[in-house]
Length: 253
Image (tube, rainbow, N blue to C red; front, side, top):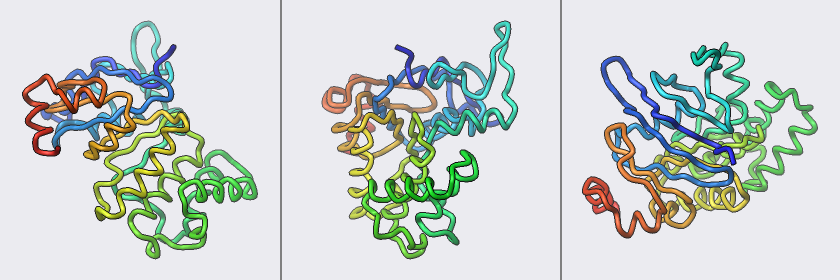
């Protein structure tokens, strides 16, 4: 079967700084991959490359068999027109560390904006779907609340619902709980666990090792722009093989 995500020797530089140095990995449809590692290891940059928010400098990234951000002709890559890249990006939902909700719109209005503007969904259908999604993330009673009236955990759950409103085939999470108070982390992770149980393909940058152990099909430890070690989360967390992985996990577990 075609992997949902395939990275083949992906490199990314910012000027002279080499952030990704030949990252290769695969994730199957319906699987959850957790990316862990110290700050500056390239995890978030790699995530942003998957939906072409960052351009790769070398290598290839595929989502569902299609090269991300480029077309290939005669063995050469040609960057897609921004409109074509944006169309490709519709199928990839992304949830950021900070919620990025429109402050002047209610929870429900935040969710229905993209389906109406981008997918040209009727307002009636978008509202029905939006209310279903709010119910799915446990916030049906907050439809008319503005972001400032919501806790951080509630805002993040609205952000997840907003991403799901575009019916993505892949969800990317960039440290979705790191900006939350500890007591609010669980409510966001519960929504993510439910998504995983429902078969959503997910790539998650996280420091929540309990979530990785319980939910992930694959755990990838990155450091200094390379994949140091990857494998079954329970095995890797219990018995890391690489000294760098052992040192990192010793500070977390």
